[in-house]
Amino acid sequence: MALSANSPQGTTISRFLNRLKYAFTDVASDITTAATGDIVLMLDASDDYTPKYADADNIREMTKAIVSITDAATYTALAANTGKTHVFPDLTASCTVTLPAVAAGLEFTFIGKGFAADAQNWIFDTGSATNFYLGGLAFADTDAGAGADEIHAGVFPDGNSNDIMTIVTPGAGTRVHMICDGTNWIVNGQVFSATVPTFAD
Image (cartoon, rainbow, N blue to C red; front, side, top):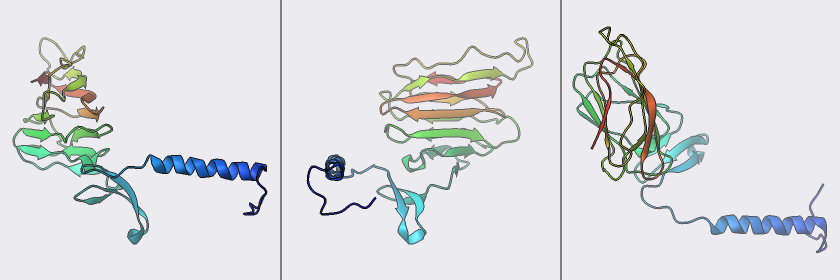
């Protein structure tokens, strides 16, 4: 069916075109000026329309799904790497990961690539007690001691101020996933270790 610019007013086609025009106007009125810290999705026309993230400082391809954490005492997670799996090396010292400023929808997964239980800890810091942890972690005790290899009932933050999470000497299968609701970090995952993970202020 062809749509004519000369369609008489009042016809079905004209009503459809008018409704479509108003819909586009409504959408356009909702678009605001981007703010510093925003992450913009884009198709890069200069690079065969490759999907990319862009923020105030960088443009990154969406296709890179893995981020390698450096073997260092500190690491800063980037908002631009939201949705990506972050991989710890076999650490030579405990590593504190500082999370980015809170923003609804930020999402990170952390795993390790060591081929034995790490002798070091993964420490996650939200940066502020006003941006604390919600949710919790499952814990499987890997000690072959008096408690056998039991499954823990769960490890939870206090839900009002705990902004430090420590995964103590994680073993194979440990996986920590967290999502930001705009104020707090909702954590979920499982930890395999001889020592229970902790939440603290």
